[in-house]
Amino acid sequence: MATVVAVAAGMTVWIVGRGPESVGPGDPPDSAPTRFDPGQQLIRLGPLPGPARQVSYTTELDMHVLTVAGRPDVPFDRNDRYPPDSNWRVEVMMAARDADVHRYDREYDEEAGWHVPGGSVAPVRGRPARQNEGGILSWEYAPDAWMRISASGVDQPHDLARRVAEGIRWETTPLALPIQTMALPDGAVLGGAALRWADDESVKDYAYAQYLLKPIKDHDGSPEPDFMIGISAQSVADGRDNRTDDVTVSGRPGTAIDWARTDPAVYRVGKFPGGCTECVAEVHIMSRRANEAVGGRDKALKLAASIRLADGHDDPARWRAR
Image 1 (tube, rainbow, N blue to C red):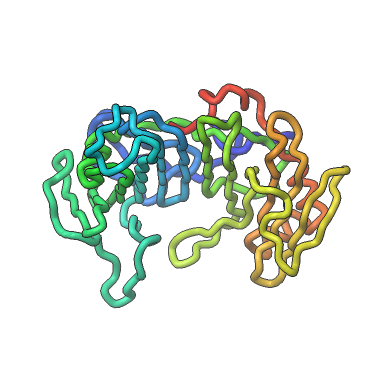
Image 2: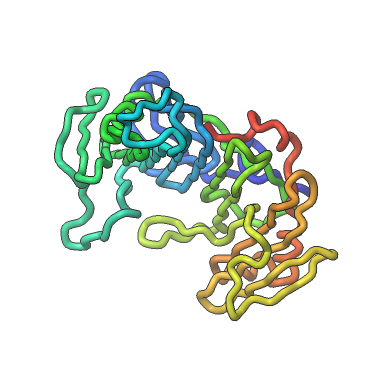
């Protein structure tokens, strides 16, 4: 039995979650949930400085991250600070209600708790906003729910960050990954996904889905994934350490790093079939119970070797996040 990894309703079991509740796609939400649906793309960007050349969309239960990069789509002015072959980059991090949108770029102060950095600036779409010295715009897009918006590669990153915030639209679209695999362990539910693609690649840079096992265990209020499956454009030899064993799986080269107390297990199989010869299939085990549920090295390698491109992978419109 094949399981299509991530994204169309009914193909796999989601954690119950939702997106921000908005009057319309152009209106800031009236409220945001404390947990998002990790199998949905919830935001889309408006006009950008030029065509998107590289896009990534990453989901967690309380955070969605959309990153877009490209080159300017305007004639080069000699007075401009950036040459025409420079890339611009925009990153939008959207946190669920009461989640810290800046948790990845600062230390947490247990006594003071978390706060939104920067000084107050003009509201965005009628909602409070702050900006720090680095030009990062923080926007309270819904009560007690914040976005972190950064821009680079342009002369006025502050202005671009604000224009991006002004142009954000809310939606609920399945986040599709162009891969499928054999049946997953019993009790596995989606906890997050990531997809990155570039316009000069037929498939992707990487695509993976993270799973939690029931009963779901919280760590400091946020569930951590038990295992991950996906594909990347790295070579089989990447990520070697003194625990790595070379293996062969149905005639295909691979590597194995077994679970060791608290050290994650990593199983990788090369010679990916059909349409992405440079891809490597991967299974990461991040908990003891996941190691037991998957069944150890042999079954983890079998799971990795079962990963294939899904039907329709050659039609980017069916799975590319925008």
